Length: 289
Image: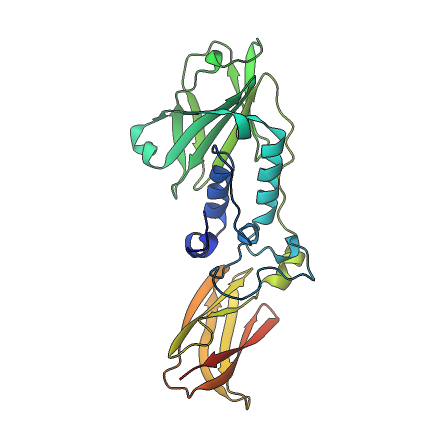
């Protein structure tokens, strides 16, 4: 998903919602191989890896620094991999998806290890999809039973399939939904990931980052807000005089990247102040020659 040569996934793919990041993280942690979680990816850290801004604040827990309600999902996915060997050691088989036009957006596969079998269905599109999967449950190495259950390991919901049913398996997925199922002769108990406490998340909603800094004629100020509302971003000189109003209006929840043109400003040090939801963050940026 990320490496030191790319911009952060959440900042470029999930600026308004964490749905695409959660979907892709589920794909990453259920495919064969060893998944790599780049530093700060699990809290939606927005800054480019080559910037010197610290990723984590040592004074606060990782959960308290979660920007997009991602941390509970990443924890759940790593625990899910530990609990179910099929997701780490299992064979990989791609499953055909119908109708064929949905194949561009929905990807499905099984992972099987001994008598444990997982089915993963990923909707990469921005709309709800209902698909039929060519899954032959009777061909899997499962205990004899009159009925089998496919438990969604993310939600705890399940589908029941009668033994010997030759029909395709019909699955409905919302936009950007990832559904890893465990196939067994009984329903599996699932501990559903819970959202980060909004009271904990609220104190990390404003974490502005300026890059490049120092800069010449223009730079980008990036910040995250945890709820829609009025946001102001003002630049001051060292005497406290306002020299630019960069943002003054309603913004949606998510990560925002605002380009600041400073051609009219003399070289030197400037302060910026970001206000949203009753909270304020400030910092310094340097304009070079």
